Length: 245
Image 1: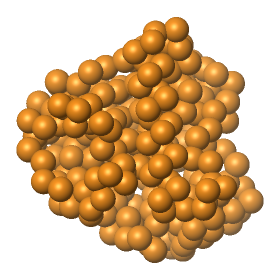
Image 2: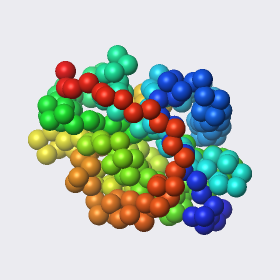
Image 3: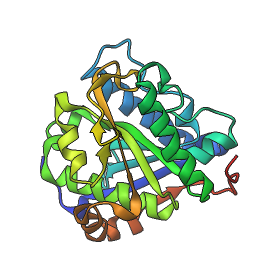
C-alpha cells in the first residue's frame, strides 16, 4: 500500500496509567491493544500475550492514517529509570537464565556505567504492523520512518542508550545493523542467536548502541521525518526520575 507523508499522523502515548481517566487516552490505549492482538496473532500463536506491565507506563509510538485515524503500526520504548520509578524490573533484568555468565556481566557493566553518569537506557520492542496494511512492514518507507521516529523519540525524551533484540530468522539483525547498533560482545566475540522469552522463544541477539554513536543513516532519517515527529499528537506525562541507585 502506497502512502504519502501527508497521509500519516504520529501519536505518542506515554504513562497511560497516569492518564487512565482521560477518555481520549483510554480509547487510544484500547485501540493499541487491539492492534497488538491482531498483529501478533497474525504471526504467532494465540497463546502469546504481547502485553505486559511495562505497557502501562512506557512510551508507545503509533503511526496512524491521518484521515481514518486507523493505526498502521506501533512500537514501545521502556526506560530503565521509569522502571525504577514504578519499582518494576527493567525488561532485560532477568536474562541471567538465557545469557552466558560473561555476557550477563557485560550487560550489567554497560548499564551500570551509564547510570553512574546519570544517563538513561531504553529497551525497545513490541513493533507491530496492522495486518490491514499487509506489506507495509517490508517496504523501504516503513524502515525509514520507523528508523527516524525511533531516533527522534530518544532525543526528545533524553535517552542515551538503546537496547533490543534482533531476530536473524526474519532479518531484523540486518535491519538494526543499519542503525549502528551492535550485538552484545564479550572480549570481541559477538553473542550468537539464543532463544529468548521476550520474542516468544525465537532465536535472537541482544543488540545495543549509544544514541550519540548511531549511524548517519539513522540520524538522517531523523532529519527527514522531523516534521512528521514535530506534528505528533502527544499524550505524555513527564516526571523527575530517580538518580542512579
